[in-house]
Length: 362
Image (spheres, rainbow, N blue to C red):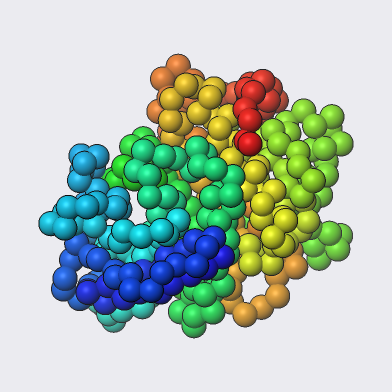
C-alpha cells in the first residue's frame, strides 16, 4: 500500500492511498478556503452514564446535493467544489469539514453537569473515484485496500493522546441519514470508549477472565458446530454469520477466525479474506432486494488506550435499515429508549434467505 499526505488550503489533512506508487505534485483541493474552527463539546449524561456530543455547527453541512454536485467526486470543472484531487489514487481520507470531534475543539461552556472539550477526530473515507459505485460492488482488491486503509488510520489515530477508540463505519442510504451520494464511510476517533463498544468489551473481558478464551471466538465456533445454520460466508481465515442473538432483521457479523484485537494486527491474508467476507455479505444484501440495500456498518475493535486487550476480537456488525417496506420493522420506543429489541424474524430464517442468494465475489 502506498500513501501520500497533503494539506488543504483550510488546514485540514488529506491522505491518498493506492496499491501502486502515487505521483508527486498532487494538490489538495477544498470547497472551503478558511481555517476550520469547530466548536463542539461533550456533556455527561448522569442517568445513562455516557458522554453526549454537541456540535451545532454541523447544521450547516452539505445535505443531499444533486448527484452532479458532489464535493467527494472528482470533477474536471475547476469551479466546482471538491474535496479530492484528480490523479491515480484509489482511496482518499480527509478530515471532515463539519466534525463532531476535533483536536481544535475549544474549552466547553459551563453547565450543571460535567463537560469536556469535543477532542478527537472525524474523517471521511472515499471508497472509490466512481460516484456510482458501492462498497459491495467494488473489486475484491479494492475492498481489501479499504481494510488496509482502516488499519492504517486506526494505527495513526490510536497513537494520539486525545483518542481512546477508533471507530470506522459506513451509513448507506438516505434511510439511515446519508447526506452525500458518493460511496464513502467515516472514521470517528473518540476521547473515550463509546457505550456499545464498552459494553461488548466488558462482556468479552469477563468471559476471558473466566475461561481464558475469547467470547466472540467461542461464539463463532459454536455457530459452526450448530450445523452452520446461520453461516453466510465460511472462509479459511474469516467468517460471516447471522448471529443466533441477532437483534436486527438480517443483521450479520463479519470477523476473522483468529481472535485478533484490532485491524492493524491482522495479517495480509486475514485482511483479504475479511474483505471477501464483507463483499459477499454486501452482494447478498443487494441481490436479495434487487436494490441498493440501506445499512449501518460498524467496526468494533480494541481501545487505543495504551493497555493490552486480549479479550477484544475485531469484527464488523451490519445493522440493516428499518424502512424496507414489507420486509423490516420500524425501530420503536423499546429499541430506541430502552435498548430492548423485539425482532419480528428469526435469525435462522434470515440466514436461510441470505444463504440462498447466489453471488460470485471474483
